[in-house]
Image (cartoon, rainbow over the protein chains, first blue to last red):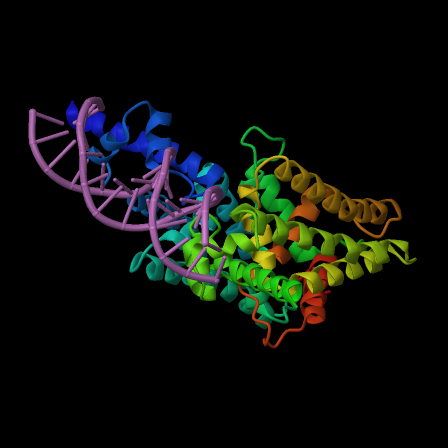
Length: 194
Length: 194
DNA sequence: CCTACCGATCGGTAGG
DNA sequence: CCTACCGATCGGTAGG
């Protein structure tokens, strides 16, 4: 079936592009690089995609959707802010580690999106961060946490996790749950022995 | 004096380049962009610098030196691992906030360095991280900390701080000391009230 | 999916 | 520091 092959090819283009964008950056990756990596001519790419930027858009917005979906289920659950934070981080890390290359592109190449995609992207990011901030504020109000600056703390928390795709190896000794466990334990309980 | 003007111009080129590299990325910034931003022709840049990459090298290695120097003094001091960590983070944040644009370039554009600079750069980074890891290990051995995985924790710690230049505004409400205080307090004592 | 090709732009040099 | 220019490469299109 032509349609199916086309879909597979498109998927393949996006996957290879993701790898190259991660390794070399979006701007430094040429369509000829990508094409030769796949084994076709550069011009042939345009039978499957509209433009170079469309590839970046697909990578970024697909992952944004994954992040949002992973939060959705948690927020309906009951439990203290510490539990909620723990679960939110686990979900976040699970999305992150499912496709580390795509995550790396997501976090460091989004600025090459043109308008209106760029604005949309930043709005989604703010919304997502806002949900984490709300968890910390709730924890503060219920007396579980002592956050001085919820936004600052969330940015520090997410940054420490989001850097992971840069070095995470899928076959490593740490599972997503281990990673999330380590990170949230440090953030919630701290390093100090008591 | 010709020499002095030349030095100033070179400094100006590096500063403007730093801004553009941060905003658009190294690969997406052309020498013509840079030149017109300064108010000269692209060809004239080459009276002051050898190549586009030389600018990146200067930015990256200058900052690497600053980071190393800032650690130097601390390691000689006495005090517990918690104190040492606190001080190391303050120094780190001070370097970071002294030139946020250069820091942002340092952390996200180094991969465009060619060999042998790339290898040198990564070795320096590993050494620097190694010193933080040693502080955590010392803290573990002296019973102050309970780090499960010192390397993992250091990467999380540094990542959470290093993301700052992306949003830090020099005139903001938080001073470098405040920032370092917030971060180390979270990492050492955790968010949980006790 | 290919060949052939487009206009634009790239980093950089020669020569003054 | 400029004008003039180089070869290479860019993203993308036409037409089959």
